[in-house]
Image 1 (cartoon, rainbow, N blue to C red):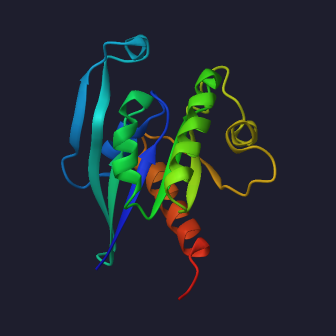
Image 2 (cartoon, helix red, strand yellow):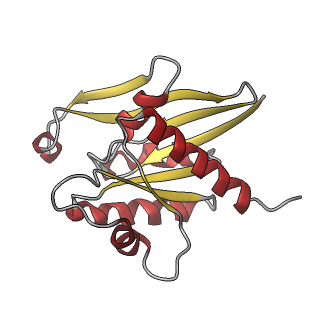
Image 3 (cartoon, rainbow, N blue to C red):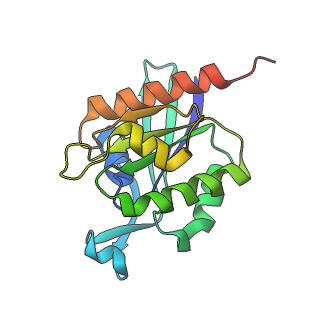
Length: 178
C-alpha cells in the first residue's frame, strides 16, 4: 500500500482542523487549546502543534493528513510538517481578505523549504463578502501562476474528498518520472 503525507495549511479560521476531522477514518490527533490572542475573536480554540488524520483510498493508498497551526508563532511546526510532505493544500477563507497576506506568507515559507505540488482550497465561499475563487487565487499567488484552485466545504466529506483527489491528481501531473 502506498502512503502519502499531505499537509493542510492556511491562516487561522480557514477550516484546517474541520477539514481533517470531516474526512479522517481514525480519531483525529488534535492539539487544540483555548485561544488567548486575537484568534479568540474568531474562535474559542486553536491548533498549537498539529492535527493528524488518516484517509484511505480503495485499500491501495493511505493519506496521512497533517494540519498546521494557523499562527506564524508556531511556524516551527510548519517547518517540521512540510519537510516530509508529498504535497500540500493551502486553505483560505474567501470572506476574510485580511488573512490573504498571512496566506501569502505561508506559501512563501513553504516554498523556501520544499519544492512540492500545492493547491489552494477556498473555503467559506457562501459567506457574505466572499471573494471569487479567481480573485483569491490572484491575491495569494498573483498572475501567471498555474496553482490549481478548488472550492472546499470543510464540513462536507464529499467536498473534502474531492479536494484530496484534486490534490493527488495535481501531484501525479507534477511528478517527473525517474
